[in-house]
Amino acid sequence: MNTSAMIMMIISMVLLWGGLVLATVHLVKHPDEEDD
Image (tube, rainbow, N blue to C red; front, top):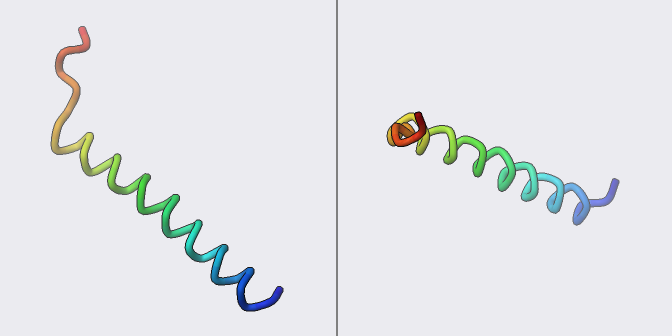
């Protein structure tokens, strides 16, 4: 694997996991209480 491919893979992984962590933190801080 060349360098640019590894950089793109790392960036996409950071974006994916970063978004997942942000969504989890947001849900923990603001639970959806309107749903009965």
